[in-house]
Image 1 (cartoon, rainbow, N blue to C red):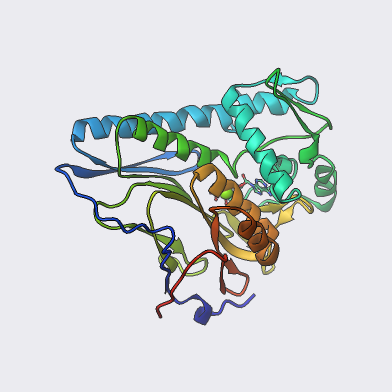
Image 2: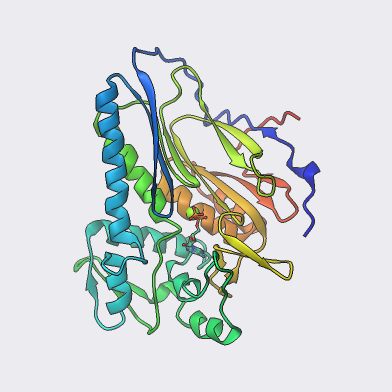
Length: 334
Ligand code: ADP
Ligand code: MG
């Protein structure tokens, strides 16, 4: 695959619909910024605080919330709720917390919308990859795993708040949606405490509360092939944005890039895009949709985004060319 630089000049995208560009009065106070490694990524909390001590306490609360959700949703922690589901749900329905139930329910919503491009049961194949050590499954292993990837076999009972697996060998991994949910929870904590300007992010998932005082926040879409460069810069106010890219966790073998976003139909890395950025009000939706669109590819991905109210996307195809959803009113400066 040859990457053409020409396709990826820095585009200044003016999202006029998303950018209210309102001028608000800046009161006395300061921007606080801090990060912590949680959920396998860097979680960052930036906020405008009238009182720095109160602001710092709120940052700590948001980090604690991420830790709580990681303890619940990490498939790597044997004591987590999701690990219990993975161990037991093929034998008997597992009662889960309302939060877990809802995140799985939302996952199934995106599975249905995408006809299975987003599928948290991809884990049956996903667990055989180790991107750090360059490990990937043999053909036989992948074939066996494929039989256990089927979102329709994730059985939810709303009354009993239970999850069951209708097939053996199934496993769930919330890696494509949990960080988005956690970002939304972080923003809720800040809003409840009266904060009006903040950014909470977890790796490629961010949500912006308010603005920068008198201007929108500029969010960079990482260049998929040039370290430290941006493929686009988007001014955003009061919205969430997520990017899924094939450069986050990957290894290469004989010119093939094996990365962490799998096509559930094959159990192999989806190969139509280099990155998918989705903009929508909630981070959970952006997170799930960026992964979904990445798997769907340019045409079907854009068709899905264009069918959803209040959702926009910037996709970078395998040649490094940018594609925008219909509603992005944009102007390009070169
Ligand atoms: P990250 O922010 O972790 O880089 P993304 O939002 O791009 O993640 O999603 C990638 C993660 O989603 C993978 O690490 C994996 O846990 C999960 N995932 C991969 N393929 C799928 C899929 N087809 N459906 C649902 N989740 C997936
Ligand atoms: Mg995602």
